[in-house]
Length: 118
Image (tube, rainbow, N blue to C red):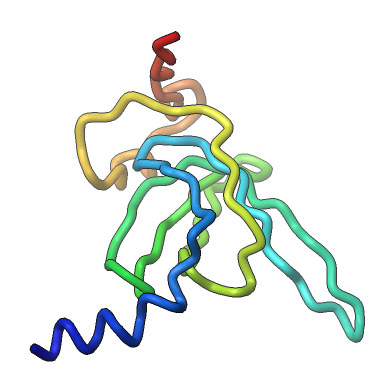
């Protein structure tokens, strides 16, 4: 009963325009940044290493390498600060969380690309 009430409250806040992406995909996350009284869009590009939660509480973690240093950022999927998520390429992975990529360096970080059936 309480689960049904929770869904009724959450459903209007779930974004309908989120693309299907999975762990291992490389994505561009366009986030709104507020600087003073100006607002701009900043793109964070990286590999999705984890997804967690469900409904309005769903989060995803994106990892990228900046000047030989790994940077991870966790985004709420249905946040109004996220303008859009664009899937750049799909990766082939066999597990739900890719935390093992944290220990890898250089070319070992790359994932095989999933081929699109046409």
